[in-house]
Image 1 (tube, rainbow, N blue to C red):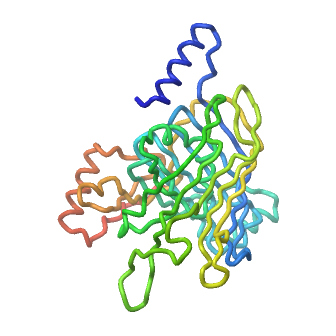
Image 2: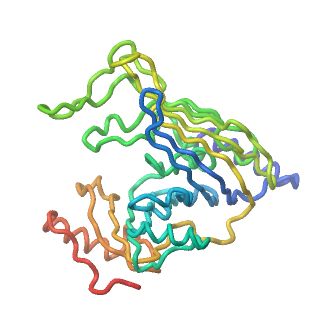
Length: 345
């Protein structure tokens, strides 16, 4: 147990004996996100999303969904769910391959889920608790309401970057960070700076990708991502962000040689309550899902696939089925696992 965790435990015990103990660390928060991708100062992609996070201690479940104004997309994600149980990360994307159905629902004023038999459900489970995301906004919501247990466990200042890093370059997956925790219960993050060490991956058509220094003056490092809790509020005994943002930068050395915004997420809290109503904090399967399992990379198996039927539970790493899938994969890694004989309705 590190010093921060020990101090929090001692304070909790003292407050409990005085009858001033904080409420259980369980809450549900909902709000809105605005995600943007920029190029040389111009927005090239923009989408509005809703979010909901349920947290109980170091367990959490985040759902993000495109707001209905985005229903003209050809391939529509109904929602994405990401959860962590303190050991593994669980991700689920539920898609409707017929986006026109949303246009019909909008016209009738009935924004319900479409017929589940048309849904495509994709899942992933991996070791760790840090959500590495690009467009869902889960990373920003995690930083705002659930990331402190992870940062409390960091002793050397090196954390997992939230930006996508190719498995080819694992040395770039961790970066130096500096952060500040809001002292009031439930001790959420107030700010985080992620520091690029001055290196990047260079892609060329006639040579393999390589790690090389950024051009001057960025070869010595710079802050390439920042989270900020911009406004706090007090609700039901919890001191939590009312507004927050997560921004990434990159050096525009080809044009201005200045740091320019690459992407931004702005979040706003709209509803908050204590408790999670006993909800299991893992994504549920509305239909048979194709799962990519990445928990065994340390055993030489980068990933393998299997299916889980509607209403079933995620498979634990010790489940006999997982052991059978691993043996099957090692015998013939090029052959995908067979689909189920009959898909669940």
